Image (cartoon, rainbow, N blue to C red; front, side, top):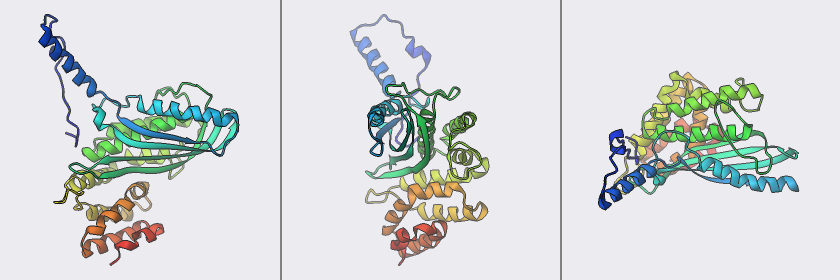
Length: 318
């Protein structure tokens, strides 16, 4: 059972109860269906921003409409069959920065995507994703309906957003249950395969850090240990809160040491970068209350994994 998520399953025979009911039974039945509805909420609770300050005139007006359209597209859609209650939706953000209007309905820009989830038994929220996609090219016409079908792609914009929706959902499920996000990562791989025939940027197989490469890595069976580490870090680490109700530290150093071993076997693996972009600030902050040995051990490993971010790691030095 997933952390914080209590699933309920019902037999068809319950739904087919004969409609020969008194008032009280009818009330119970209505309550029952309300319960079913509450288990079918959309998975994502996304904050959406479109920054079009670099674009002027009519193009900018069109992009103002796009912000609300994207918000509705992301938050109003069921992305999976996994039951979610309304209070379990995944908090995330999509920030689209438009850098150029190529034509009246063609744009270039960057997309920033973040997500986080609450730690069980705590008021603390742990980051799961922090990514910057610099290969955003898309067409958009005012009031154009935003639609997505993985088998019949109707535009690069909704294809990219859907890809990241599945990445958010997959990482969240993997943090609750070992390999729980597998079907989401397979959807990502399917999207990549179908998008490549269109020639859009960011989907080509030759790039070592793009949407295609991330989907490939998350579906690589030889990297399954990384996903197990991700689960342990959250479920068997942060969720095991300390006596003060704060997130547990028990799996932080072992997770970092696992990454150093992974780096030795698979140098420059993009999952290490994906982890660091989401987790490095958190690790430094949480280990500020660890003992000197753990800080030293973490610092020596992290400075090898993320040498360009040495300044952030300095506070772990004793």
